[in-house]
Structures are given as structure tokens and as C-alpha cells.
View 1 (cartoon, rainbow, N blue to C red):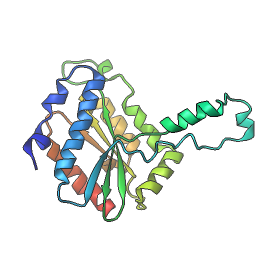
View 2: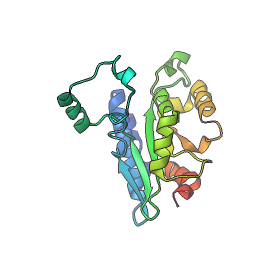
View 3: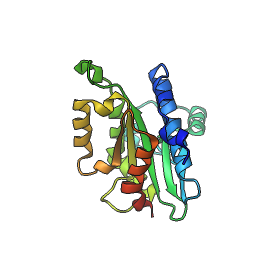
View 4: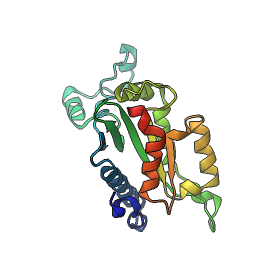
Length: 208
């Protein structure tokens, strides 16, 4: 595995602006797994389109339709072309079995040494909670082909100071409960190998 892909993390951490850091972090994760998966049956995809049209096809009752704004057909056709759904940050697929785990990358500030508790404000991490809703859980599991209920069909990788925040660590551990292998705190100073090791040790077997 290339050392530059599996070990370098300083570049994205020094970029200015939250969106810039998050975007670079995404590409860093993709690069790590592309390198790690060379010559294997595993494939990582960047922003898979499996759920791009998920919401636009939801059928509402006539009563609900009579009470909400209903765009005309021309507007709806534009919406359908663009997509009205969800877009995971990445997915990892076993090309032999077709089983897939969908991934999210969440980067957020946090309360660490020398700071104050409200440094951990922000709700980026809360956006992962949509994955626990009955509807998304159902379609993610169907698409993933992971039928083993001891694991979730998604994996969340958290980055930034949130990974060392005493409150957020407890909060996220409580949310995931027994599914603690379905998230990974990619803490500052840890290289790409730690990320690959987590996948290999805890998640890969569910794709076989």
C-alpha cells in the first residue's frame, strides 16, 4: 500500500473552511481504500447513486396531496432528472457477492484541551441519524444485501475534534448502542491504515 495514501492526513487538516476540510477528507478516504483494494474483490465508489431518486417516487395519499404544494409536471420532470433522494459519501462492494456497505463521512469541531464546551456545538454528526429511520434502514438493507441483523448496512466515519470530544463520544456511543462497529472515530494522528484495519476486522466479513 502506498505510504502517501495510507499515512498522510495533514494536508486536509490544514485547509481553511469547514466544507473544504470535509471535501478533502472525503477524497483522502477514497484514496486510502482505492490503494488498499488494489488486486482484491473489493471496490470503493465515490458518492454512489443508488438512492438518487428515492423520495420523488414516494406515493402520498390523496388527502395529503390536497393539503400540500404540488409542482406542475414540467417542474417535477426537472426534479426527477436532478434527483430527489440521498447520496452516501461512499460505498464498499464485494464484486463477487454483490454485497455493499454504504458510508458517510462526518467532520465536526469538538471540545478538546485548551478549549471550552461550546466548541463542540454543531449538528453535522446529527445528520447521520436519518440512517436509523425505518424507511432508510429498509432500503439500505435491501440494496446492501446484508441480511445479518447483527450489523447495520452503513458505516459512519467521523473526523475532526469531535472524535476527542467527551460529550460527543458518549452521545454517539449511545446512539449506536450494540452496533459500535458501524462507526469509526478517525482521530487526528491516525493514518489510513487504522481505517483499513477497522474495515478488515469488523465489516469485511459481512460482505463475503
